[in-house]
Length: 337
Image 1: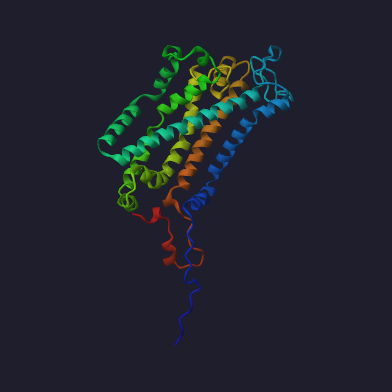
Image 2: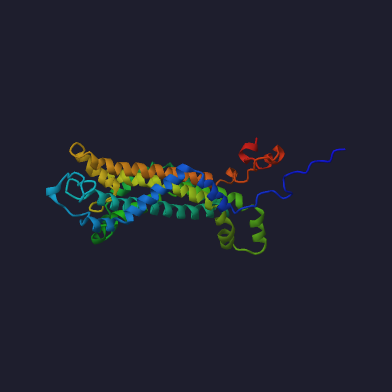
């Protein structure tokens, strides 16, 4: 009588459970396009922040006008040449990157905060408050965004009682664009957070917190918000690219960031007048806008895949395990029918 063979599989061979954020980091590390996009965005951000160091190294200033050096060819003093006023193109691109990236990130973050507040209140309170906030959200969504932004950007702030010395400041147009875009860019986050909150408020741990005497603010801060971080991160990341495009369009139309503050959008606007004399003046800002928006979108896709709990393939069995055990660790998206 033959004795049964001993299994090579240890009795407790299940992989050690890892934290959700560690699993998300592993999934993100396998997304090559997202990694490349993150490196590109970090490179742009670091280069923009180092603009004063580059100016010191080149011995010039981004606003220095030299009409004798108009349309200068690339060289040691001006690596990307000069524009129609003899200003260094590289320095203006770096300072313009500070403005464009700041507008994109700041507007997206402000919109995310506003959308999160509205979404949590609507989903947690429910009733007529939910109905009112969602109908208001639907009304904002139904507005044509770009024409509305153009109209708001064209309004003279002086007629609203804002002092002229503030309006004429270099940073006023920057903060105005951030505020205008943030006020109408929160709807996606609000709807996502509201849907997640509606599902979470009936979960057992939330009901237990209520039974233990937890107040609404405590329940939201301790139990609701930590569980809706994923859609907020994804929506905010994807919104950065859209905001940069909006700022570029408004600046291209002359309604965005106003000179002498450089941005990629207004650099593209001024370059169109000299497209035949110096086509590279339009190429550089257009290329940076294109690369930044594409990189942000790829990064958002990578974060979406990494933060999706159904995409957990980190617990796949080792080679040599039998089919029954392998089926235990299949991707949930493949086993659901």
